[in-house]
Image (cartoon, rainbow, N blue to C red; front, top):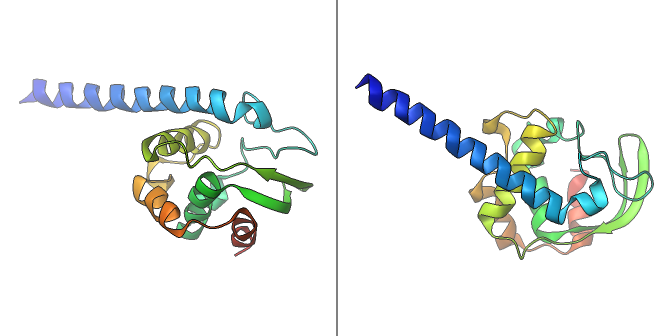
Length: 144
């Protein structure tokens, strides 16, 4: 019985590490070009993600916004970290739900220290796909 418990814990840790690695690889492939390798952002072009999203992830509304942002993209002026941005983020709807959850898990977990229970779930992504908002509506959703 104890051996099964130890194996179960090891498997869960291995699965979490694989998901984190997959999220990091997806971030490097799809997000780092604008938000930089460690999520530092590019002043005047793309906001900083590292250390900037934990408060949003604490609420259901915030997680819904983050899922919608990833699925639908966003367009219009925002203020993030005290800096103004007026550009567009593309939709990543071509990624699977699992890929979006993995990359969001990396951004929220690794770059923001958000605990697993406050991260985007497959259900959040499915709801965002169902809503299918245009990018300017996602911008309005940000302020709610």
